[in-house]
Length: 313
Image (cartoon, rainbow, N blue to C red):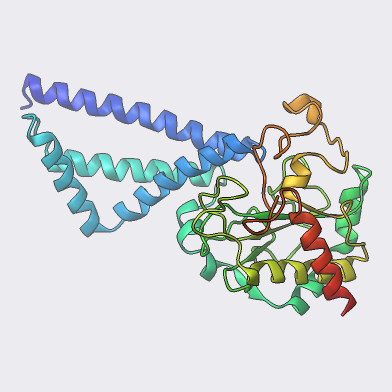
C-alpha cells in the first residue's frame, strides 16, 4: 500500500504530466496554425527538442539510462521515485508527442533536422528546369490572385551546412549539391512571410549563428552555394520565362524590406508597410551580403548578376 509520501510524489508527477501535456498540445497546435515567422521558428525549435527526446526514449537502452539518470538526480534530495513510474512517465510523454504530431499534421522535426539529406531528393539543374516547366501554369494562376508575377525568393537557412528544411522547395548543400523537398515547385511552402503564393523558395544551407554582415558565423555561404544559387536562378528564369530582376528574384532580406512594394495584407499582421528586414526591424536579413566584406545590401545584386551571366553563357 502506498504511504502518504508515495501518494504525494505520485500526485505531483501526475499534475506535472498533465501540465506538460497541455503545453505540448498548445505548441503543436500553434506550430500548425501560425504563418512563417520568428515566433513560429521559436516554437519549431522547442518541438525539435521534444522530437529529439522522443526519438531517444524510443530506444529501450537509452530509456533505461534516462530512468537511472533521473533517479540519480533526485536521489541526493532523498526523493526516490519507483523505476516503473519513471518509465511510465517517459512512455506516456513520448506517446503524447507522437499523437500531437499526428493530430496537427506536424512533421517529425527531429528527422527533419538530422536526417534531411537522406530524406530529400538530390537533383540536377536539368531536373530543376523540367520541374519548373511543369509547375509554371499553377504558379502563374496562384500569383495572379495577388496581382504579382511568379516570384523566386533566395534565402540562407541560418542552420548548419548539413541541415535542410522543408520550408523551401530547393536546398543547396555546402558543396553546391541541389536537393528538393517536393516534386511540385508550385506547392505552397512557408519560406517567406505572406509571399508564398505563386512563389518558389530556395535556401543555401548555411549561416548558423550569423550575427552581422561582418560576422556570418562559423558556417558562412560557400562559393559553391552562391554559384549553385545563381545557376538555379538562370534555370528558373529560362523555364518560367521571367527576367532576372528584383520583381521576380529577391533575397529574403530584400523581400523583408518590401523592396518591390507588394502588399499582401501586411497591415493586418503587424507590419503596416511590410518591412521587417535589415533596414528596419532586422528580423530577416538572409543574403543581405553573400560574403564578409561585401557592402551591405549587395547580396541580391550579386546573385542576380551571376544568374544573368550563367543564362547568357
